[in-house]
Length: 192
Image 1 (cartoon, helix red, strand yellow):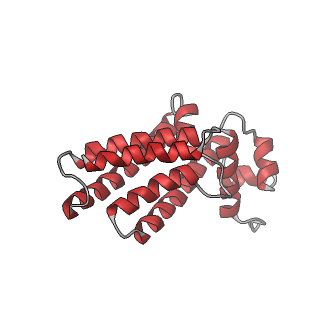
Image 2 (cartoon, rainbow, N blue to C red):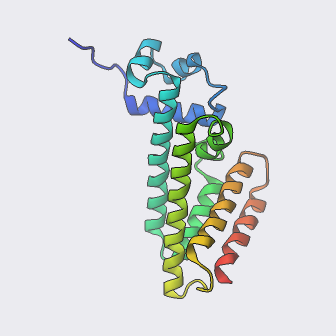
Image 3 (cartoon, one colour):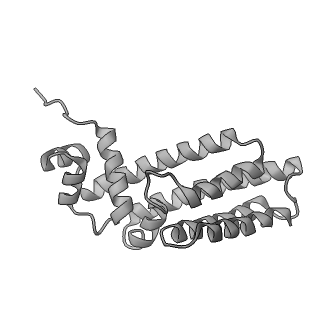
């Protein structure tokens, strides 16, 4: 008879997300994961596979979390501009209980250059954010909220690039006031 899991798999996965986010992939050892997740090494391997498989699952879980946060904020927004502003603010402010920056941006720099699976997951996630931005920009252009002289997809590429840069800066001691100024400058692209 198979043993019943003595831990909540999703809770353990969320702990792994946070540890990879804080420390990075290379710095996080199996011992770190066992200690941080509070499970036995055998349970980790039986449930998640090796470190790399756990990491890929953590990226998926992070994407689910991020998509939920984005959709929640966008749904509450009264306008396309407010929705995009929410995305910038979220990238800068994050959540109090979460590490600064972005797991995906960290992994794009640390792991994607040598790991095809991580590269694919990162590019897919970035493409999804760009598509979301393009849809919001298009909606704002159609409602007259934004200037319609530029292609929405191209504007989305520029805005996403700014967001990625903000996620990197958010990991440093850069003043949040400066980050919000940068976001405001990126938002001004929508008016021209």
